[in-house]
Image 1 (spheres, rainbow, N blue to C red):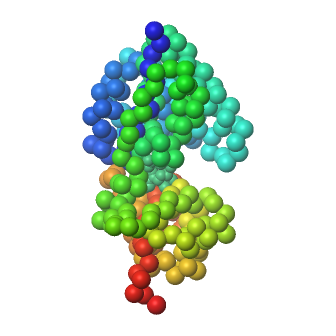
Image 2: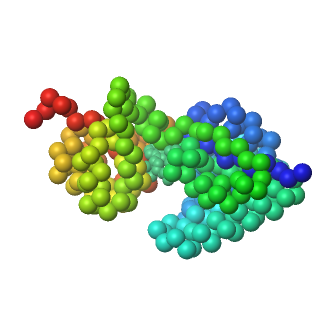
Image 3: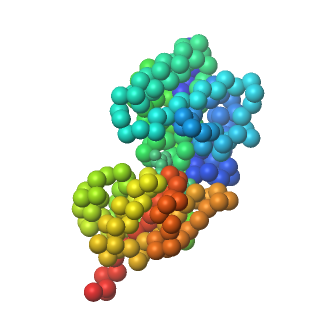
Length: 234
Ligand SMILES: C[S@@+](CC[C@H](N)C(=O)[O-])C[C@H]1O[C@@H](n2cnc3c(N)ncnc32)[C@H](O)[C@@H]1O
């Protein structure tokens, strides 16, 4: 019998926001895999570090920090092959995913390659959107609002078109794209109602009005919550 593949959402950073189900499956898994940037430690692993045991085999998937597709695909091919080797040997593999696995998570790369061949279970996690809304004390959307999620790496023109159409919006993957997004929101007259949230749920969490953000120090783990325009405003 083959092992089982688990995609475990570990939430936005606070270890108390990991679900009981993820903890149970993680403790029982023989192998634990997680994305890790070339230049640093895995954020997903750090969230559950206290649960891991030295008896577990760990696989760090070196996520390339480049928009180019080919090297990333080669990395995921190698990682999927290594994980498949363990599954074929009957060992369960837990793949850790920051936030929720199916909300812009790199777990899709492993899922797409292996889910049809092995019994697979995806355990949802608290996404960054939910964590940032809670941190800001700001509902993501209410009543019939349409919530739009927009990745900041989009071209400036497209960002502007999407944000111009949006009621409530969340702009994710901010980092080095912050200045571009700020320009667009200012042009659209939406800057004043926008809240910036950095590292939600961690001790280093920061919540600021957009106007107070230092553009030179915006980390990857940050997003913007853009409020629905006030219909009474001119
Ligand atoms: C590739 S997406 C992954 C999202 C993740 N799967 C989730 O469910 O939240 C990464 C982006 O999520 C946002 N993000 C993730 N964790 C965050 C946190 N703790 N605080 C603020 N933003 C966060 C940032 O915009 C970051 O660039």
